[in-house]
Image (cartoon, rainbow, N blue to C red; front, side, top):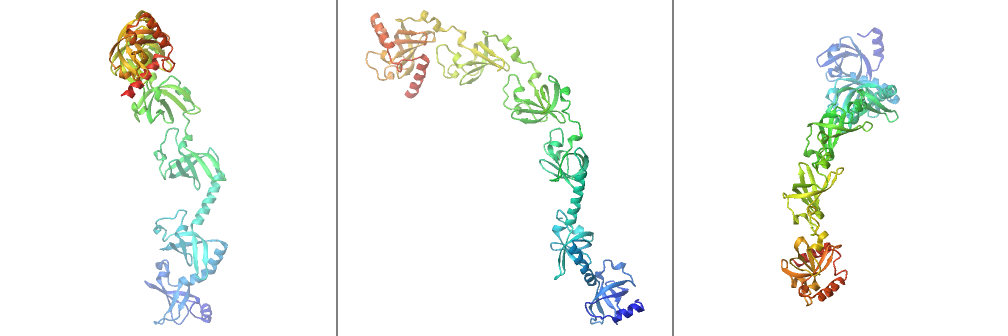
Amino acid sequence: MLTMEEAMKQSAMRFAAGEIVKGIIIEVRPKEVLVDIGYKSEGVISGAQFEDLKAVKVGDEISVLIEKLEDKEGMVILSKEKAEFKQNWDKILTICNEGGTIMGKVKAIVKGGLLVHIGVEAFLPASQIDVIPPRNLTGFVGNTYEFKVVKINQDRQNIVLSRRELIEQERNEKRAKVLGEMTPGDIRKGTVKNLTDFGAFIDLNGIDGLLHITDMSWGRIGHPSEILRVGQDIDVVVLDINKEKERVSLGLKQKLANPWESIDSKYPVGTKVKGKVVNLVPYGAFVELEPGVEGLVHVTELSWTKRIAKPSDVLKADQEIEAVVLGINREEQKISLGVRQLETNPWDKAIEKYPVGTKIKGKIRNLTSYGAFVELEDGLDGMVHVSDISWTRKINHPSEVLKKGDEVEATVLEIDKPNQRIALGLKQLTEDPWSNIDKFYKVGDLVTGKVTKLASFGAFIGLQHDIDGLVHISQVTEERVDKIKNVLKPEQEVTARVIKIDKGERRIGLSIKAANYSTEQLKAEQAVLDSLKPGEDLVALQHAFDAADEARDTAN
């Protein structure tokens, strides 16, 4: 109950709507509270205005605002919240002007944020709740936090709060403290905050550090998720600090010894090693010898004899293989490995087994435009160049005289061990007929042969000893011939006189019309042939063959 002195003071007050007075709680009902303010009738306050109605006790003194002196039942309508709002307003203005903070309790979720009670009702936008705006606001209702007053509207009596600014301020202070205490080489506890393709961000109690993927393990890692997960607590090594930009570089593998420090003694050149294929690329295969140590088997080191286009043709990922250490570069952390070194190099014995001049037998394995490959043994081929097929005939393509799968004899001409090549020859099995051409043909001899090729300037006649002679268009008949195909046909058998032999140019000149000439007439025709213009005569039999092929294609 009010004391006599208080009653005297209260009675002297002017009871009017909007005034704040003190009262004593005289009864607590389920939904309302009765208060004696010293007026002729009691006042009533809605129970919803009390945070915990069960904690309200009879005899408690409270400040209330008179909303209405008498309602239809004669009761005084009071408000505890409006009294607090009016009393706290000046205090809130002072805090706001000073940029101060205030404690408040989250009452409810409203559109765009939360409603907070700080003595008066204030608005907390969703963007100001935390550094990262939360998706679910339900968990904040009923909790008490510290807030910063960021905006106040006196006319509307609106207040806007921020919790985010206080959190950021606290983090900045903590970040500055951590940066000030941190030095390279420190081992710090942290929590994995986020994973990216290039690394992981680690929360170091207020500041984020970057753990790059290359600093996670001495071994190969495709993605940070292979060894880390978000929320995981780990110990990391501080590698570098940029205080101006507030950036910290971290390492995980640095906690362990670098396996490359003693690599030379652990894997000396020539050592046979075992490992697992961890990556296949067009130029080779990477083999893991131990965590953090990989070697490269170049595609050329897979086989001594087989032409392997790509490593995946003979190796598979995760396959366990043996290899030999060929070289080590500790500074660049590279090891060269070889698989073919596990076997004897067949080229080491090739010179002894196939010395120059040796006659060999083998099957034609493949034909190309420049020659034929002959298999000498499994994995070892020799090549017959197109120019080494015949002494006398110009072969444009090996397929003109050879077929894949044919078994042939050849002579070893040269062995190039560094480039792993063996040159073979077919024509070298026989003597060059041009070296003894005088034994076979003399000027004036009468010969018989078949037309093998036609050209605009004449015809080639196939003679014995696999030699061709050339009948110039002027030597076919006594009459003028405009086109050689009008008088001669391929495969036609003719008789002709040898009127010229040029050993240097490897060429025999024939004359059909001189088959019945006397010695004096032969000399005359030979002089005519010798006087032909360079464009009409053949510099070499090779050129004649080229021209003949062209003429044949045109005729067809």
